[in-house]
Length: 154
Image (tube, rainbow, N blue to C red; front, side):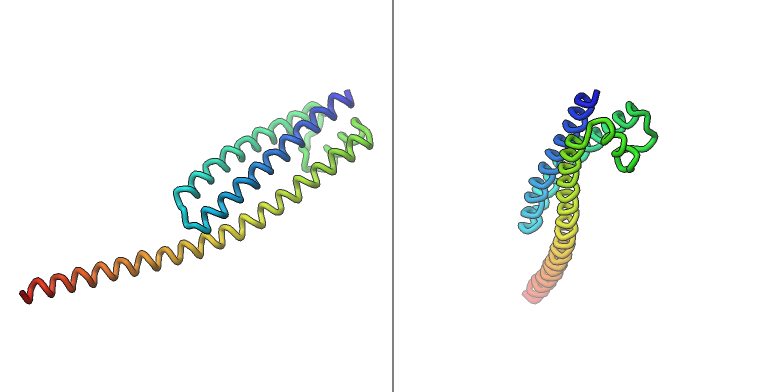
């Protein structure tokens, strides 16, 4: 049982780490699309990110199954879960899992920080785009007024 449990937990951890790496790659693209003001490309990236997030939700459900299999009411976010895992897979296995979980947390925090900067940059870009659109609208109105004035003086 300990080896089987370790294999299940390790598999979930590795899959989750892969998902976070996929998100990191998509955030790289997202950042580039925001810098380029490529809204169509940005929407495409956001859809792709949503797919990864859906896979993460599925993964969390599988974590909950492990918790249920262990007879625990609390999920993987609580100390009771990790104590039960540690007791069943041994110190070496547990240390390996914790190291990978720490990598996931660091990557997740880094992604959250980057997302915040990207969102701020996007908001600034949108504000600038609004100014440009308003300016274009005023220029059109001025041109229309000018052309009507010219036409009426002929």
